[in-house]
Image 1: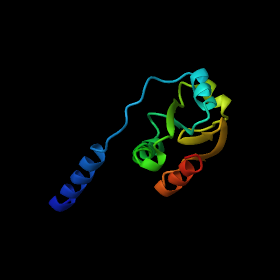
Image 2: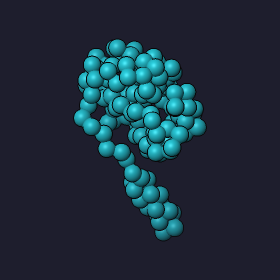
Image 3: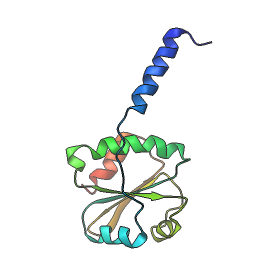
Length: 129
């Protein structure tokens, strides 16, 4: 059984996580729009997620926090829905949700699958920032 102190600690932690700001994103981009964005040459992050994916839910606030840092200001983030954007998944050979791909100068530089460690995700972003 949970005592009052444990309950308050859990409640405070939950409130803190729930209060984290999440960026708002435009409507889903088509494959052609994604390819055009990559072709511009600037740094691009494609984040493949699914609403039911626990790992994706852990990644999102980490990615948002990192993208808010000045060193990653120019990194353009594109969300791809694992369940509905099969054409994008095929084009970039993505086989699972919770995948992040980074591009620069129109080319894929690296990718990470299922990563939730902030320092590893930051290292991925630094490869193109």
